[in-house]
Length: 257
Length: 256
Image (cartoon, rainbow over all chains, first blue to last red; front, side, top):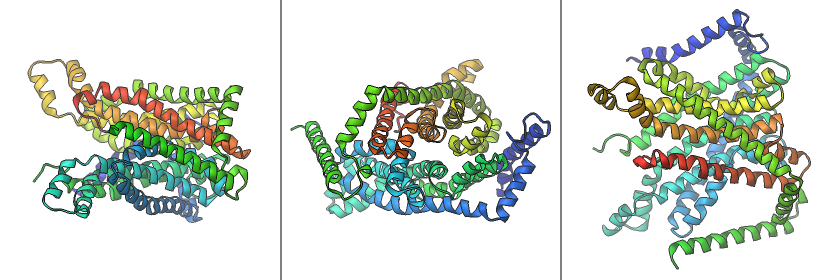
């Protein structure tokens, strides 16, 4: 299948959805306040693109996710490897991080508001928190589940501890780390939308919640569409290539050479 | 000491040290009281709110909502995923749509649902059910599609009717997908529930911690967070793990 055909095939379901949506609203089955017709939503999108509010809020949300990743991932991977190396400490720390992992995200918001006030810091803290604990947990589990026989093999052949860490533990934990990063983007993206609704006045979450206050259903649908499309693009352009470069290259998906 | 006892002892030591550091920080840091209440204040909030009956009520509300979403998801989402996944063409058509709808969490739809249903129980339930449902449909579909055609053809060759292929090949083959979908859907749904309770505010743990924030009752926030974490551990232990153990772990397919 050519690239063009693949794109068309991917777009066809959405075209069908918009068609059904147009028919339902045109037939007057639902009031426009509940579900505005696609034309209205397109017009709202055009207006929001022209006055800049669409770009400002999209960039605000994306910026928070990127900042959370830039701060959270390196710290979480480093700590995960260090704790994972300590065979006494690791079984103690793992359930603690698992607990914070279960708690991560929006549940921290009231405490974040208490500490940092409403605004930028609180939302960014939620992002960092969500990403950090998920990646930490997955790195720790990844390092701990590398079979010790590989470590013994490197040691027997005269490898140092540094060799074991760089050649065995980190590559061995990599699939788990990549899974952690993938999940953290999924959870983080949801958390940032929810946090923006409550705690700040920029971002896509704020945009749609604010639109609800004014009963602007068309603006809400523009926001929802942008949220969904951004996720599909992230998945296609970042996450899938990341997995191809790491997990598949290490022979964990395809057959061994 | 056996390693197990050693781990337990070390765990107790770490827990004690953490509680000690927390108490010390709360007592000595030059911050207003509401920034960091000591562990004893959280314990006080626990006994206080339990005695008043608020905590049990709110825990029950949140649990009811998430369990309802889990049951609805299994009864509705799994059959839909199975039916869609049975045809190659249909699943290819639905895949991008399902991927889109499962990636837009229920909380993003919440503003529109507020326009539809107003501030109330219905909005919370629809948002949480939506959040649990789509990852379940999506992953069930992926599970069905991952069943090798060989098995289907093998049964066909031996003259099995269509329903035998569904019950003996497709459903068991899709179980890892269903388990993944339930785990992911419930994890997303639990967070969406907390957020929806904060925004809509009709009882529940999310409402409790959000409301406590407006009154600077930080001990109640920490208590609520603790409960949210503990309830997830309970859900994991009593719902998700038994399901995985009874199905995919038995076939050596577990992936937690």
